[in-house]
Amino acid sequence: MIFYGTKGSHLKSERVSGVNCRHCEQQTSYTVSIFGRYAYLYWIPVFPLAKKGVAECDHCKITLKPKEMDEQLRMKYDNVNRNVKTPISYWIGSLILIAIIAFGIYAVNQHEKDVVEYIKAPQTGDVIEYKPNDFYSTLKITRVENDSVYFAQNKYEIERQSKLYKIDKTSNYTEEVYGISLTEYQTRFETKQFLDVDR
Ligand SMILES: [Zn+2]
Image 1 (cartoon, rainbow, N blue to C red):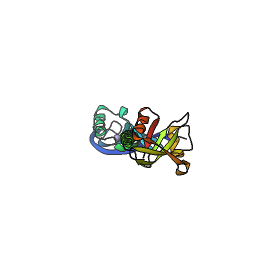
Image 2 (image 1 turned 30 degrees about the vertical axis):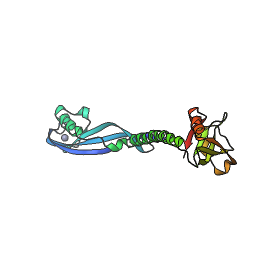
Image 3 (image 1 turned 60 degrees about the horizontal axis):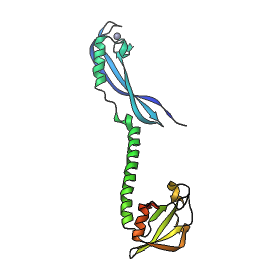
């Protein structure tokens, strides 16, 4: 179930003087109150909606919406309203979402940069993702020496590359290892036989 809706909060009240109240016919002051509104998702404000406000006669207590105000009061109301800023907290949900997306993009870019270095200089423990057939599996580097790279093979396969972490367990790898030259190792990435490296 998704919890969403709109909510309001009081932002500011200010007294404006020198108003001729049409209702009580007094030269009096009004109190202008401005309310902010925002849309929320799971109780977190996501974005602001238009502000709302009223003006209340300090003498007879009549409350007027902007469209009910005469020109003189409306000008004073607009002056107050203009100076009330929408709080940044009304955007907090969107800001969190943007931060998560930005971090995701950063992490993917960083991984791509890292992989270039991992392929150039493999290390013991590196896990290579590859697709020997219709399924995905992994190889684990057990040793790197004299321009040769040695692997243990994962005994399991999985349907999706993103789920490989599930089968990347020490006990899943074969005891026997096989080796290829460093050049061959790097070529296999160029030809897409090897897809990715995790370190
Ligand atoms: Zn009044």
